[in-house]
Length: 194
Image (cartoon, rainbow, N blue to C red; front, top):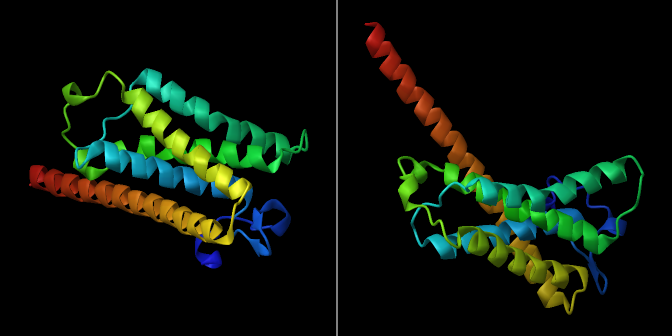
């Protein structure tokens, strides 16, 4: 399992959460990202109940950008050695990106094609879409930063892996949509030329 969910993580033991003698298979920042992904996909699934998610309006888009910005700023500052971020803050900044990505990617899925903008949930969309996954990811990040017991630690590993799987499936569906649309366009274009 360490190899599976640590594909894109450096997995340095000194930058990874610990519980007793066990080391989490992700660094604090990646743990925050993957747990944020799990939180966001879970909340979107509960919220939508099969209905497509609307693409965020401008106000919600700025809110999503605001929760994703700390990771980029902190990552650059750490790269240039301007400061060294504590572990808990790395996990929180990662969770912001994990929560934000699905909110931008899920509305692009094939099931959303043709979804009328009139069906957008204008009131409360930003609140539910942001607050619920942020609260859930904050709880999960707190449990990974300050673990209670090893069973909880193992459960968090599974949830992080599920977050990564959801993101991979989301990307695969987006690629399939793109390839399918281009194939249809090229066939239509070919018919027009004849």
